[in-house]
Length: 71
Image (cartoon, rainbow, N blue to C red; front, side, top):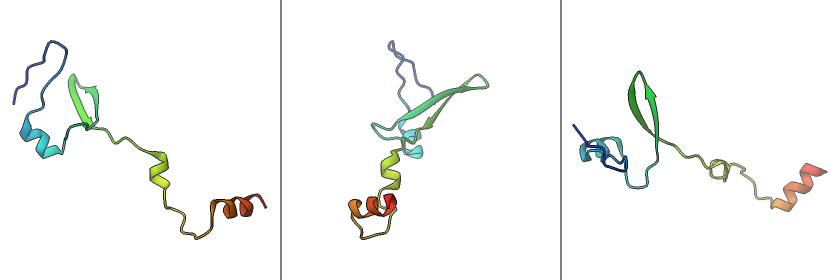
């Protein structure tokens, strides 16, 4: 499959590849060069707060936890 680079450096990823790789609008891609080839990988933007939300299995309030931690 061939795509033409537009004047502003934009390239259209062919639809079969987008579907196969699950690349949707607003999907972030990380670009790099490896052995002279352009490589695009779906970026996994991490949300540090979202990753730990709900990890504490407790019924205690934040104030109660802070009192316990601080003594």
